[in-house]
Image 1: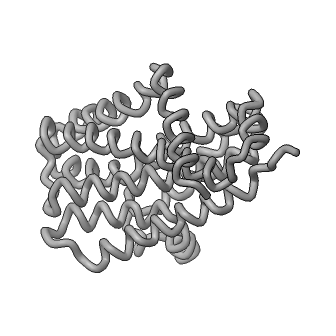
Image 2 (image 1 turned 120 degrees about the vertical axis):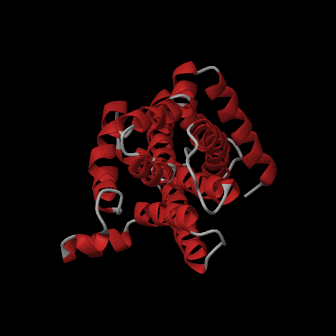
Length: 244
């Protein structure tokens, strides 16, 4: 693995996405708009909004980056770009981590924009402060990027890539503790929630929301999210076939 080649891949991906206004809008416009809409959905119950809004920063980045990464990667597979890259002296890890860095940087900007709207314009109170909030959101974006790179190998069209969202992400969304406490769910669903990564992304946001100091539980949750993401990247590298 070469740092120079990895960063070159990152630069290429960012240049490509810079000329894609729809992707830019999905990344930086849609999450703040959805959070703002949610505020007015709960305009008569500000307490519910203040509880839910920070948790969405552990969900939106993952979902957005999952969709965008899987579609963009699949597009490069189908267009032959990936095949051409694999004939060059670039390793699979250079490709995978180049993409991961590019989309993680976008995830960082997305977290700053969405977090700024939530904390500044919408006046949501987060006890842990803005820095832990952004860190947790960026790791959620990193997780979505890694899962998107991995699952793109199992789709043959952009429509199939989108189908992974309800099949792969929605079950995690329903059991992560956003809608009901996990302890109140059926035991089987509790076991499922304990082994999927979105649970720990949402738990990290709960820690940031409720605790002033950085807790050991927050560290544990963030480490688990990072480990899942790295594992997905390694598995994703195995799905790339080098052309001879």
